[in-house]
Amino acid sequence: MNAATPRPAVFLDRDGTIIEDVDYLTRAEQLRLIPGASAAIRALNEQGLAVVVVTNQSAVARGMLTEDGLDAIHQRLTDMLAADGAHLDAIYYCPHLPEGGLAPYDRSCDCRKPAPGMLLQATKEHGIDLTASAMIGDSLRDLDAGAAAGCKTLILLRTGHGAAEEAASALRASFVAEDLAGAVAELLSRR
Image (tube, rainbow, N blue to C red; front, side, top):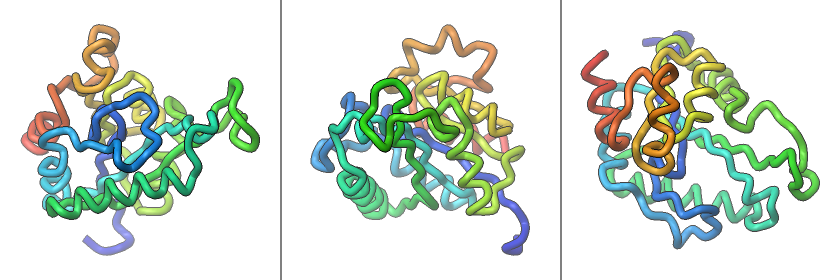
């Protein structure tokens, strides 16, 4: 595939999808990979798919975490995945909170999921074919962001918040999986 040809991507939510959801992760030491997540990402890498994290991080707007602190968390995530032979092509985050966040993060934006801004930015910067791409996450806002961006496949995980949102996802999800490893296995079997 030449550099000008858009390639498919798998967009991943972060908390409850790749890492354990701890309700406002604010320190790199809190980060724990969900079992099987590294191997699943490595399988996507081996298929030549772009793997892009898109994550809402309102802890920044809430004053619980700085962007430098968030960068440190993402560096630890990158390092942990690399130790298992996996890599992310990019990480995009939305630090905004339209209702009550601290300046300058206290605003509405087009990047906070369910808005598609992070996916659209990644598409422009990484040459992604959205119509051949998938969004995987543990919430309906993840699926809605993927749908708004034009992703063909929307996968809800039962990890994180997904089990509680599964009943409401019937018309949105292409399928539901127990975890990221199961989602990737099913996704790749359908290619």
